[in-house]
Image (cartoon, rainbow, N blue to C red):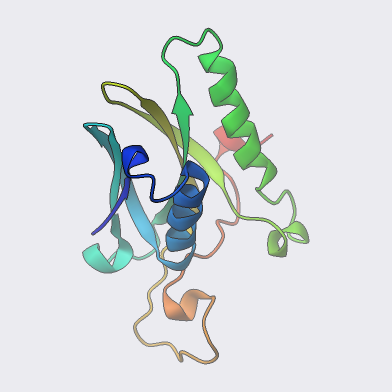
Length: 160
């Protein structure tokens, strides 16, 4: 299990830095579930890795966070824009697969506190592979070391 906390009041990191830290973790670790909640003025992202539950062949996830103002009159457009940004990172062909992240947006989790609201977009970024019994070989980056591998074909609802 893992936990990430974004604390705007603490001023330790920007939302961009938080997103980068979360994304880096999800790129290096096969995350099989992500949940988000608010506690006071803080956003908490927690989840489970494939190693935690001994999972194999299940989708792995990543997330991106955006601050929302509940009083904005264009929330739908903001969320659609966030989905579009993630789809732009998804490779459309095998040639592009090496150049882009394999992100497929699947769900928003909306969290709100007394003063802030966040939209957490969860994306499929690969598939958990069994890491027991493979040669670790070079310095990683593939199924042998348990990192997520790209999902070969997007689900029907996400094909453009």
